[in-house]
Image (cartoon, rainbow over all chains, first blue to last red; front, side):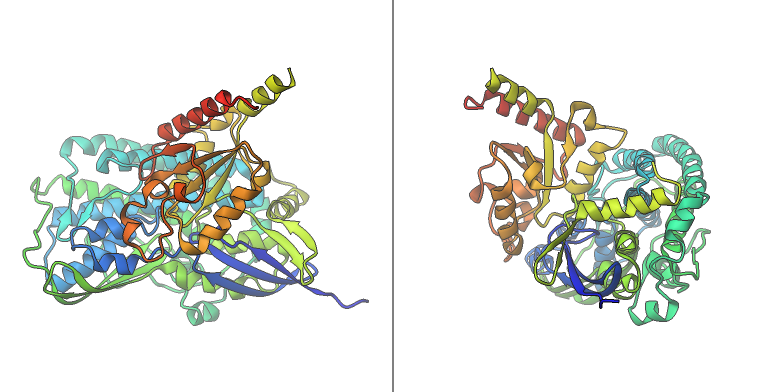
Length: 397
Length: 145
């Protein structure tokens, strides 16, 4: 048999298959993926430097715009860092409101991923359904904060808007309806035999490798690592309410889907409890003012939908921070693709790369060339390969 | 007569190519949101195209940074003319808070001609649909089509 030639499939560069714009260079032997090179930097906007020229009150608005999908996680970690540095105690009411916004964001982010995973597998019905059920969540966000995304709710010492008692019953009502829909979607997706065949045992990230690559969030939890900042380093209201961590040991794409879908249901549980507790607290007490700019260091950690996000701030007593540092979860998780993709087929590459990180925010462009520049596949062809595989297994829409 | 057919065919169904020029993903997920059941712009014949060579409209999101600028110019060159370029979101229009960034390559209309400006952070879905309607109006007014 003739020896198989190695070929290179560039995915990218500035179209993201996931969250941030990355450039994946897949090396393939026939259909088998044997190597992956990842390059970052097409989305670099210089947030850390911008933050050094903004006042502490302005920073939450800046870091909010790091990512439109986790647009609460970054300000959450930022205000935690500033409060850590300035030594401020946040009012209970503000803590509950923070948790509510954080969990609403988690639901919409996870649903977004489920939909796109469905799209990659050729189940456009799942895509449409998941995104349809995401709309009520965005509506709730709009009701509470005034915007569908980029909520601008966080400030050092508290939140900017209160959830008034009159708003709680309609929010609860939306939540009840959402719960039913989420259960239906979860069962429909997880019980589907073709979905099982297509993603079970695909893109396995073992526990050892996950630890080695510092995988976090749903990616780590799907590989059996019990890691969740909300439990490990409780902040906001997470310590005062009942909820569970979702952990599965398998490490494949199916486990990641299970973690995300079941976490949505946990999130509704958290929101319901927070809303219930808000009723008993004094109204309007949502802001402990930051009297003096921090002089010293502070670290904020928050469990974003994709994993742990860390913000570090160093103040020198002036209005502006001296140094600002951000570490997003995707940075750790994307690297773990290196092991998850290897050994799989090209048809599984799309879903495996997407499994780590839920964002699919641009029309994908991908082209496959061999090492001498001969054209092999486009991105559409790759998605088609993936979708055809589903059809071969007797499913798809 | 042929001219009329061409214009009717073009404005009846616009194919949109979405260029992410270092955005924060927010505009991008809202664009995808337009395709899903709540807003469903496919009703109006608007489709996301997989390649700039098939596109009538370029939706460019994000503050264009120095690394991505080359690619944006290349995508613009690849798009068949006449095409409508929409600066999508406040970042593409004027940079907003990224104006001070060392990696900011300047507003989009400094680099390529922009026809439609859709403001907001992110624009509301209704605003996006209005933007596409404006694009159609603009194409209809073209004389040499």
